[in-house]
Image (cartoon, rainbow, N blue to C red; front, side):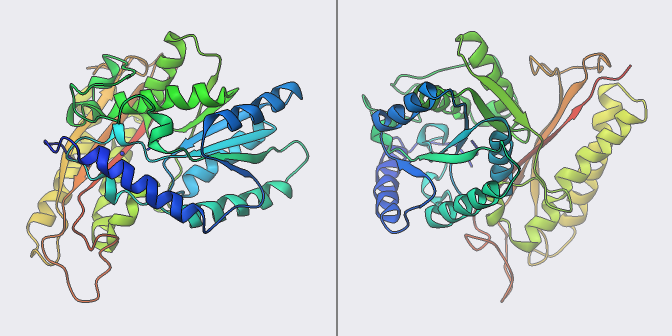
Length: 370
């Protein structure tokens, strides 16, 4: 499920959700798939799910907010390897956006999403026997997902929410206080609507995977949470729907997030276990690049802010001073890429002409070692 700032526009998220639902409905009437069904409401989707259960078929579920990329397709491929049927949801969930985050600017690419899924189904049909297929797309409206009250993004807003604390208050939760409440709530609703045998998430959103695992465990939910390794570009940048906003200049500098974490992984693999020994290696890389960028002219540089660099317990996400080599640890970070100060004629500035701030997150799992 994938993730920009905070403030106080109390009804913007609700209004934006309703407007984008209407736009999405109009778009979906243009491009209809041929290899799977699209469901807008829950009863018909449940009817299909019951049919699958009666026929002893298994279902893997991949929740998304659309703007599909290779990372999403990797999750679907994994689900198709382990299940006879795959359901994919496409829903931009308003409750995981803060009141000052621009929900309306989140990329919505229904036609290309459907085309990618149809192409993937063709690929799966040519695969070895036993590979499943995409059977259904669940693309609900916000009225379907939040039937009693309009969705609220205020910290103390009214509504029926799922909160997983203290996990949701750490790392990403510090600067995005309603984000994981929205994620847990929408996932609970999606899981209730689809009753999947297995659900699939990417490792890139590591905090999200820990929270969903905790939710499934604590609420006695009969589904297995599967975590698939992070999909990356050839140079290492983690795939994200928001990468389209970067453009060439910010993308080049944004790769610092991968280089910094890689340096920390190298330190751990070289035998270091202390917090300073591991995170210090990452900070050296990040601070050097930031210093170099600050020395450039506004028309040449891409500035960023390091939100956090974390070394945490793999289950509780509590910060640790020394890695227990029998448990390993989660190494994660978040960078905030600032809008470009000046742009140049003909420059590739990405979607939004370089004016949209972009939050980049990434992580590595420091594996246990004997």
